[in-house]
Amino acid sequence: MKKYIILFLFPFIQLYSQERINKEEFKKCKKEFSKQICLSDTDRDSILFYLDRCPKEKGDIGNFGCPWPDTDRDGVIDSEDTCPQIKGEIENYGCPWPDTDNDGILDKDDKCATVPGVPEENGCPKRGDCKEYFENEKIELANFKKKNSKEKAKFITLRKIIFNNIPKDLLIDDNIFVSIYANTFINDNISFRCSSRSTLSHDTSLFLDQLFWTKETFEYVSKKLNKNLIPTVGSRSTHMVDRNFIQGLKYGDSYYTFIQDFPELITPDNTPVFYYPRSKQKPKFNPSIAKLIVNFGWYSSNDEVKVHFYKSSNHYIYTYGYAKSQWKLINSEKVNY
Image (cartoon, rainbow, N blue to C red; front, top):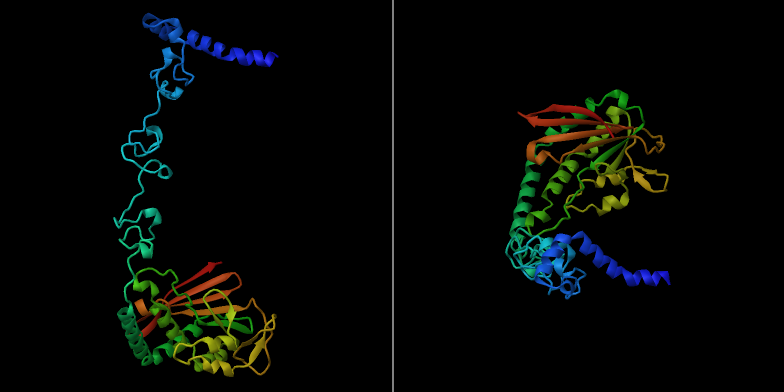
């Protein structure tokens, strides 16, 4: 029963409290209106007449009994509207969604927000015909192959320099992983630009891999280092070369078919992989052996080759540059990984 009495008396207590706390405002009101009017709440916004600056319009106590304005009438009150003078969207804080490139497709729906486009390409320009672009790349690749095929002696010299400079204390294992296909990355971030679908960088790098890792190179390196060589793919992973890889590598040139004549080594997961033997004795498989990568990814642009040698937790990087008809060691560093 006490609970109901308190609830019944609460509005009167609140009115009395408001009257007592705001005596001056209450006195001013009574000079013009009756006490009953001053204590009334005609618009039923819980704010008494003498405190309500908008007594005939339901408002908010935080705005002295007046409704918050919405100047642009977008349903977002000015106090919460980032663009109070411009009609916008509630989801964008009262601002209209921008269209930066003025193509009629709002930025939030536009995959190429800064480049004018068309709806069927999600705001990106309509894809043009890249036939001419790729024909030019094809010619460029053919010229690159022709030029470097005539300079095989340059890469024979490079292999001598590389394998003469590897510190002997790093060559304590019987086996070495050698990457015959280092730059496997092909851009899959396809856009409206023909260049986004280019494979020229990948193709030139692969060609140089093939030009370098010949049967003669395997013979030279195995004899020079007295090691078993296990060909791999990739710059960081150790994906060993098997028969499926050789058969699947169709780039118009059968540079790696000679590997199919190598003997095979059985891995712990029972996969037969190729290796070049240093002797007739079959090697024991050890996945933590040293790894060598000759990366031609920078060669076509600045005549540089990076040689990476991984051993345990150490990573050795040797950078060679070709200038004035000779190779020079530009930089060497050791990093932990």
